[in-house]
Image (cartoon, rainbow, N blue to C red):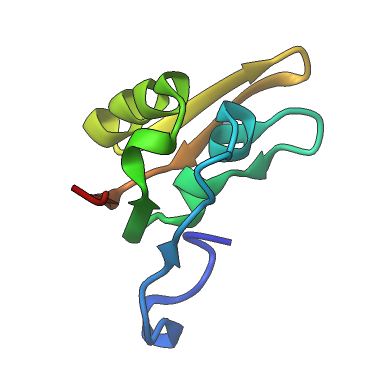
Length: 95
C-alpha cells in the first residue's frame, strides 16, 4: 500500500488509470475494511483520467479536496479514516 514501503525500495511511482465508469466509491473507498481507493493508490504518483469528459461530475468533484489537501478523509459508520493523496492529476480527451 502507498506509504508503507521504504523510499529506497520504491523504483517507480504508481500510475493509476481508472475506467471512466469508476464510481465515487471506487475512487475513495474506505468503509468496513478501510481499503484505499484509486486516489490513495496514486499517492506519490499519477492519477490518469483518460476520456475525462466521460467521468461523472460527482467523481470529478470528488478529486478537488484531495488535490488541495494531499489527503483524503473518509467517514463511515465504522470510523473516520485518513489516507494519503499526494498525486499528479492528468486528464485526456479527444477533441
